[in-house]
Amino acid sequence: MDYATSPSHLKPFVHQVAGHIPHAENNKLGFLECSDSTVLKPAQKAESGFRESEFYRSVFDNSVEERLVLQLRRHLPQYFGIQKINGLANYLKLENVVSKFRKPCIMDIKIGRKTYDPSANPVKIARSVYKYPHNVRLGFQISGMQVYDPEDGSYKTYDKQICRNWGEENITNGLDIFFGNEKKRPEIIKSVLNKLRSIEDWFQNQRKFAFYSSSILIVFEGDSTSVQTPKKLRRHLSRPPLTHRESNVLTNAKSCIDVNCPTERQWRGSFHRSLSENAWNSNRTDDENSKNNDENNKDNDVELKMIDFTHVWNTEQQDQNYLFGLQNVIHHVELLLER
Image: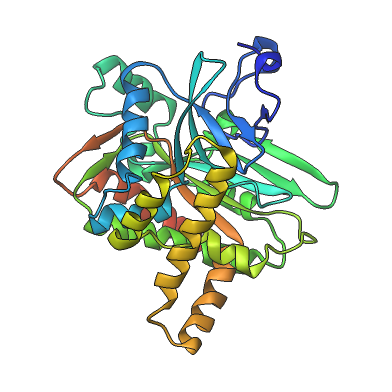
């Protein structure tokens, strides 16, 4: 399939900074951007593709009641199921976390001391260690990033080959380049730290999943002249998960509509947000809501999501591999505040 055969409401996603990035000369489709603020991620073949789609399906299933799984939704791009293009290729339809930014600065950080899963053979393990030997001690690696330079109005891109040159001694320099020297730098870094610590809290408590070769995507606005996202929309974007009661109401409503209709999908989104906001705010005072809205507004200048789940395994133990890397990311980002 080539770009010319894709539906007219789709276009190549230009902000992919890591993973299998298609090149124009091979004429293959990679990530696709939709007009409804979603992206289509190519579903990998065989077991890894099934594992990722099953992971998203299980986390976003309306019948889920487990508190830790509901909490996990906040840290993932929202999932809208599997979509076929021209009846040939399968794609995961996901929230486009970049869409609200005019000039997004984007970083992909792969988390974990081990990036290979328990099924990896010795050759796969040796190849993974050889690619980035610092991973054993750092527990994370920058896989790619793009930084917007407002002075010349262009992006500077750092691919995986460049990023692999940042080891233990200079990994903070790579993070330093990403966050730049603009006036909002401390505010952005603090917002990133808030979100990273929230994910850390979740990992401290969960004993359900083990994540290998999974990444964290960080996005913030690189254009200081950009118009802020309206407060009302920002509250919607930070909505909490549905309660079981709300989920039942939504499920009943969905049974009456065509779930494949784009218009109805938008209606369901508004309905979801309305229920969630009412439940979220019902037990708070006006002062508490005002304080939390101010904090959320600051944090919503940054998007930070866990992504890439082709190597997620079930477990009954704490995911020390991921926690080690995540805590080291937090440490190195904290160092930026001292510069």
